[in-house]
Length: 358
Image (cartoon, rainbow, N blue to C red; front, top):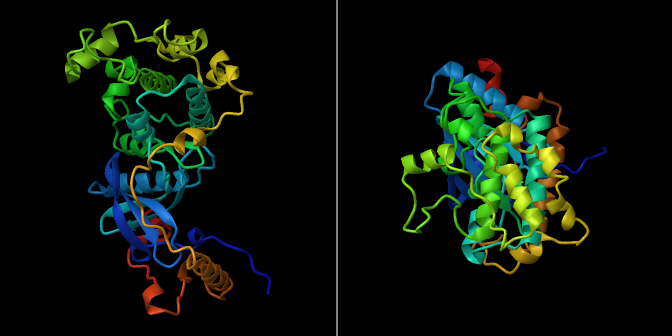
């Protein structure tokens, strides 16, 4: 019998398969925990979204989350699976083991232009995918939503979840996202499009360059209040990169992002051809060089290296046997011959959850 090497994610996961390690963050609508697959050892980020909402709203959210699960881009955090359990929808996400851009900036204080160019290119390619392939406005681009792994890969997270929740609840023009990085047209209640993400990216990159959030009082006496910040974003000239500290290409890049008139902002595709990115394109730069010099955001106990290969091999055998069994696909479950490795489908998994609802 011919077999195919499959991943653990090819069989529906449940809460019983996952060991909770620690909370690693809070995102739009839920807490994110680091979890480990009990019998393979793979680490995931598990995000729970409370679903204390109307049944009709839940249907639409689940449907759109299933679509998001099909995302195929190296610059978007991968959603392996979704399942429903005890009133919460859980997203089983790729774990980015070097934390977020916010974690990196806390350590390095400022990021040099060459690294910013590499970072920008990856984020812009992710935004290009969201805007042109998925037709999604992220609406919450900020340092903590740009995640990094030890390979130096930068990926966008939380795309679609805040947008899905907002659109599903009829809140298309409400303040979904972090107001610090919100484009002026959103604050003023005007219509907005993909260019609102470009404003947010410009503020993030400028913050990384100068080591502080761009909107602070000129006398440096602390942060603006909520209303002062909103007023400054809408009424004051936009911040810019100091010309005496940065290259003309970088200053131009920031100006191309942070334009109060959305029509004057460049799109993701246009920014990918900006001279600032082209300047470092042939320099063979890699973010892992920077990332490897930093402390990881947390100490995570690793699976014993001696055990991991055997666990993974057992998983592949079980998966292949499972998927060749002569039974309907929705009845197939992984059977593990050891009590300490046994799994169960306790919650209502997304695949079966969708059938009666949709």
